[in-house]
Image 1 (tube, rainbow, N blue to C red):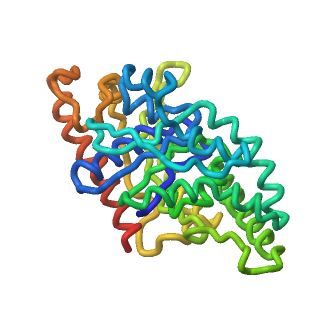
Image 2 (image 1 turned 60 degrees about the vertical axis):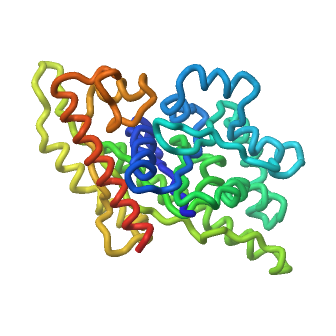
Image 3 (image 1 turned 120 degrees about the horizontal axis):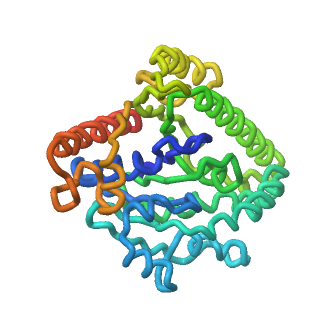
Length: 324
């Protein structure tokens, strides 16, 4: 099993759409056993994958969500004894649904981190709560984790447990700053974790990261759309190209590119798919699986076919990097 978090400190970069479609492609076209963990309290992946009837079932009291997996930890009861998953036929994946209540774990995990970085075994074990979750999903080939844009305690615990992370990104100055933020954040808590380990006298009691430090797989860009200025004129593409040309240098400069040598840092580009995205969301289907009954007409059919190639290219690029 290999675990990949889709993460960027900047929101609005198409993260959930990319994750769900890449996961569906891996399951349906590459015959992988795939699980999606919705670890974003906004639950966008869960809403994308499941229809209203299923959502009512999940959140009406009978369903099992990510919060019910980790909540027992806050009560001193350890990890939930089982992790039931919900299957999506249209995406071909198993899902651990998200839950807005997961946000309530932020303060708990932040407090446990204070103990962990001081060498407290309890705090370290609590901080590895998502490692325990992933350990119970070993039957899958791939586990994709959707996370919020936060540089907080929940995402720290997720990246502590994950083997890899991938960053969907837009082409703007704020995305460059986001990479710098991510690099500093990861470096800071990695050092704190190591100091905490060094503070434990008996090496037999030292909790260890399941895969070592998380590795950065690369980034996936959104295709640029020229925007109009106040006079209605389209802004030049040169500004976009200037920023795009800086991304690799910024990533190398902040030390994020050490994980996957021998591959370009950019995994691929996803163009603007316009009306296909809301059509995909309302149909609870991958973009490349849309049909006429979902509202596809005319030139849309060619775009649906293009989407399969686009998401397939990202999926294959991702797998090349984790299998080398």
